[in-house]
Image (tube, rainbow, N blue to C red):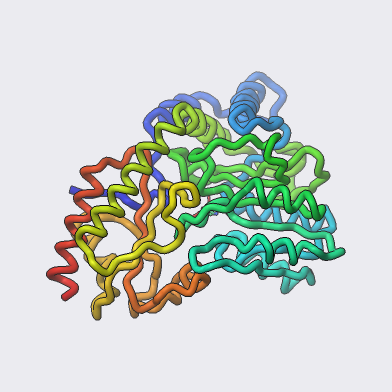
Length: 379
Ligand SMILES: Cc1ncc(COP(=O)(O)O)c(C=O)c1O
């Protein structure tokens, strides 16, 4: 048996998404920018998909710019703010995905933009009082904080942060790559400027995502070229990916609460099973379902000399997951997120992540293998 518990890295593509994409790959070869029949057909696929996305998020289709995925959308949000909107100050956190963290560092070093890091607690919660203090500046400011942390699952109170940004006149971007397709969004009600999406995190294809840009903002391209995406993103569109993304979104939002209940029950079951079998185990980040992304569980296992072998051994025994720490010496150096919450690096940290396709039998298999490994290989 093999189980896949690394859905925060990527998810398997849904069969219905493949069914949507295949006939398009076979027939829709036209360039969406061509004005003839073939081009118009291809363009229609893209515009239908854009309307689907907008319907799910309660926004305007013109607010969706398709990109090559989450990283490009994150880059675009930051560059748009600093180049087109006059932002000179970015507030972010030390535990963002590198698509934001490294981009902010690069912009700070090259474009003379000030970057402030908001305080976070040991579970990865943003200190809202500190955020409010940082917002009290005359500089044009962008706040970029992720909706859910991809390693430790802690959720940001999105509405509260959106309200704070509005109060102080700051732009607000949230990296929603891990939550898109997993929670409902009402962008009109939320009042946010930018959010990012990657289809492969909710059973869509890889290499496609989008940036939502609030229609009130006058922005400019990150990738210059043709007039695609209303001049905001040059390059012939990935229409197969775009159609697949829209289908994946339809499937995700068909019964998002049902998926949430199913996956949360699995996560709770795994927590309880692990606690039953390991005396000395705890979990990084929030685990309260109100404050924690239901698809991710980051475990800190008991100390062992052979901690570096854990992931490798799990893989050999058929359990695919990922390290909270990539460093084989057992130090937390590999994960800036675990370092950011001052996690104990001498313990083996493992992230398990689930999807609507995950079953309880798979969780039980993983727990069984963990117990076996800790009582044999790692002693
Ligand atoms: C929170 C977050 N942001 C951004 C990304 C980057 O997305 P992509 O791989 O589609 O570029 C990821 C992917 O792991 C992510 O988890």
